[in-house]
Image 1 (cartoon, one colour):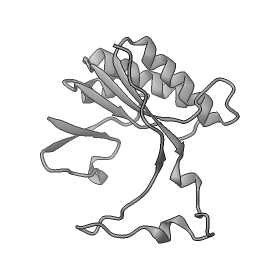
Image 2 (cartoon, one colour):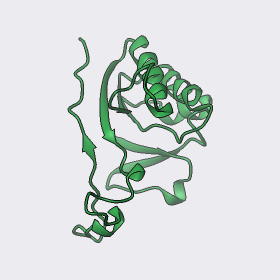
Image 3 (spheres, one colour):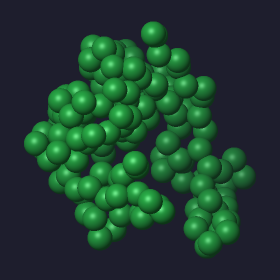
Length: 153
């Protein structure tokens, strides 16, 4: 069974066979726990930049543990570390550390650059102008990634 946990079910994608569940925010512990109940794997995308982002991630991770999730796949950031010059890199490090401390299985996908931070390509063209519709009319997007780190057994 697959489901999508979203803030607004009316705007949620509806892949065939998927169920939509609602949680108002990563920081809403009870809602997250209920939405994740029965899940084996959680794919966790980072929350928007805010002063409470790490706390929101921590709450979502703790809710996953309480709901019985066995694996977390986390979309992190290349170079996530305490001495990273960006808030994003430092916040991702804290979230990764919290995931490691859970003793769950994990995978960190380390993006080199979030495409929304890069408004133009190397030729000076706006990135959104390069998107081409896929079959079914959905825009295709690109992202720069590094290989995921394999979790320790």
